[in-house]
Length: 340
Image (tube, rainbow, N blue to C red; front, top):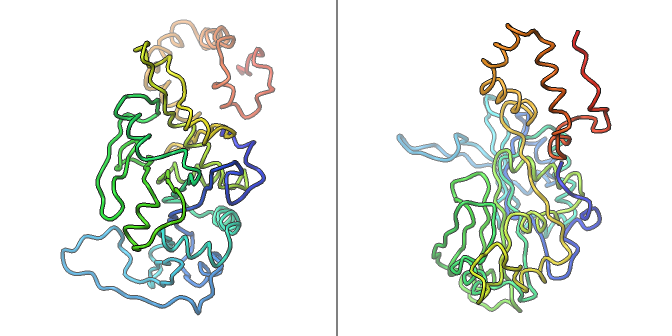
């Protein structure tokens, strides 16, 4: 189960010094066909939307099959007038800012809960964790990465020049369902808008799609806070202080600037539900695939009681991560299941 206990109070920010967490992008599908109902669910009046129809050119490839939508400065509602496709709602970075400016930051929590209650399907959620204290800088992050002074739960990192806005750092693959990007937001604003932004502003963005997006939406719903975004960042990456005398990076300590920024934040892991069922169902499928023939042989030669005895002998080997998969962890694990 995901850890959310520190994030029950502040819906807008993580609630800790120097950290602000906001939503930067959302995309979700609603289980109905009427765009007006979607407008009511989002909380934006019909008068603020205008209708758009776009005819696709022959051979043209687009990310979506929708050719009809309602558009406002707060987002788009894609629909199929034939009723063959469900409603798709998307709010980009700028549209998320407009939505928050109109409805207030706490409305994000209410919107996520309404979508979940309507059994909507999350396709993408981006969370932006901002440091305006000056602790996290582009130079410090790049310096640690190039010195191999980091621990992270991604296999790779990279950087890409973008115009305007300088260099964006990527932790994980851009093509994956979950990765982190980091960049100097202040520099981006100066390049894009042509005016200075007051004070330092470094942004760390979480981009989550598919099951990862659904997991984050569930976490926000449960915690009543966007602050879990800071906990996710802390769980997935740690920058270190290189040692001049010890080449073993496993003994390097956390970089002071990174530790100060995330000092009071608890780590939060996201455990997406896998396609086709729960994690427990995944384990059952793995067991059958890997050990099915061996179990069938024991069953045929020794009987079902031999299989049960093998499982009973393994009960003391269960760890905390195994117990989390059990619906009632207080159950007496040493009691054999009904073998009838």
